Image (spheres, one colour):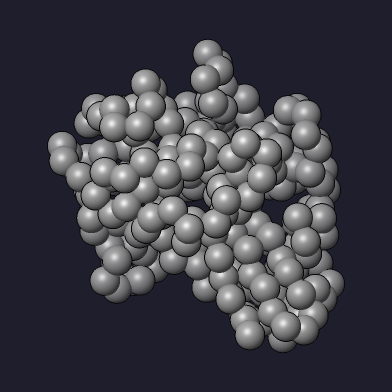
Length: 213
């Protein structure tokens, strides 16, 4: 049976968001529960419930710095998006199927948790696909070199076709259009969030859709 699941990399292993709450929650630099100022960007990422009250696993954090760079973890300075390894991504999107299949037309949306065509409410989100299989930060990846701002159906993040297990067929250093068939396909995404106003944001979710054959 086909399924899409979402994981964060924490303490060296993949943590299924289904185990720890409703999804990702973004907080300030000092950790869980810390507020993010209006117009600023999150400094830490956790698995939590929809109100951000239950502390789950801590995920990797990438803070938007400029159009082509992000601050990884607690670093003082940023690096280019293509230099960020897969394991440091905010989110691992994983598709599984009982038989080997190809995947295509993969898109990620940020929406209002009501209609996938509507933009999320109250939060500005930056997103980028990370394709960099090395565990070492540095040039060599072939993912996005610029953040985009997903907004319902108006702006979506397109992800690489048929990346395979751990994204190995997505390419690393060169642009690859894969047609490989696998029972599992993995994508890696950097996410950064900035509140447009004070308070928790409940009309704010992430949706991934794809075709497989």
